[in-house]
Image (tube, rainbow, N blue to C red; front, side, top):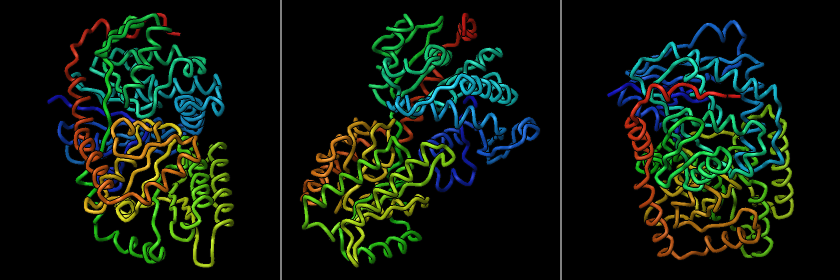
Length: 472
């Protein structure tokens, strides 16, 4: 089997891949172990120019080489804090009002992608298959092509791809789509994301896109596809019953004193709909006085991008809302919302999911949202909880057993909480089983293997692999 080279913004350490890592890390590490290869990307460290230019740091784990580089402060600010997370992230999540575009940051974004590609070239072998991940690295494949690399290259987008009218808000939108067309396979989370890309290709790039995913634009032919990232449900179930997490869960249950538990776990991000979720829970307590003192919402929201002003404001707003609602409904022995701005080990979260009656997953927009899938897999099949899920999460296409909500509808979410808390056991079991069928059909291995099969099946055309002409 040909060697696999995975490229992602951040590279999980060998320790993380065996423990607390999320779906991307577990999935790609499994593929790397099978075929042997390299995992290349940013270490997460901000370093001096001289350290950054020393070359990748290599760490071996069996047949897998972890190759990481640090970023100088200017590159971190322009590539990561700037264009990736101040422009691409909000626009791709339909928040044009929060997007900031700066030409220097965009130039830095492309410069860092070219720099990373130049570093990666030294690690490549002629028959390697290259799999690039997510919005930080859209121009990475084009940078490799410009240096003569003709290997099979695929790109997978882990966040939504916006409709053309939204994407047009990014001034260099054409350059970004042209860069995507330098890959041989481009993968999306949902049919809607793929359709939005095809729509842009036809309406704005004057190219062609067929129903089976064949795209031709900017002098390139490529394949697009829908690859639904998943989980390994049996592993999640095992984590949910792991012994070392049980004491923490028992301590929480004891502190709840028999109250029902609603669990929410999200990164601290404006796309997650956290303030709307808190207001829906407040509305539920207001309209259902019989539940006051009898149900608690635990919101775990680890900090993310804490050096970005927008995210500091999110944290401030959420702390204010939690304090306001708790001030309104708390008693001497009751706190309706327990808001924790910290990280927990995965197996502890899975155990908490198993003990809760509701999983409240209500992002305003999300590529997939693996928390929804993890919540279902962690349940006790004999007495499962209920997943309340936003219709704007990619997982909504699969989790048909969930109670679907519009996260902008505070009253609708409040009503779904009430329905979930009073749902009969037979209905809960039926919904759980419906969801589990899809979790097993589209597990993490299926996502990984189907993408790589399509990428390895690409027939290479050495001429078309070169960078398209007339790039801006």
